[in-house]
Image (cartoon, rainbow, N blue to C red; front, side):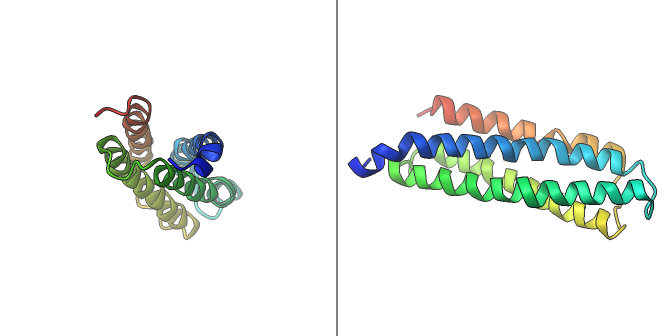
Amino acid sequence: MTEYFAQYYLLLKSLHIMMSIAWMAGLFYLPRLFVYHTQTIAGTAEYNRFVVMEHKLLAIIMRPALIATWAFGLLNAWGMGYWLDLWFLAKIALAVPMTAVHILDEYWAIAFEREHNVHTERFFRVWNEMPTLLMIGIVLLAVYKPV
């Protein structure tokens, strides 16, 4: 770690954690909105309200938090020289599928907006657990940094 980077490490780490929390909140909440959205009729005011809620959640919270999480995390990894540490590579191996979960959520939000959702309420209830499973692995790797 360079002397220059050392003075910013804790700030960048804190920002990474805060952005991760915001991103995860969205990843937990959006599929729950999808569950309730499946219970509405396309074209109704209630259906359209969910479209707006999902869009705003993605645009205002989730996308910026996703980008910032990756940016602060990769910057810290570079500054600390974690690139070849196995725990870091394993964390990345879980962060990539977490990003895929986000991308699929975006795809399904668009499907709802276009009134082309093909998934059931049950599907979204089960899907809602995916970020939790990935998060458990990511947090354990980040905290314990196993060799």
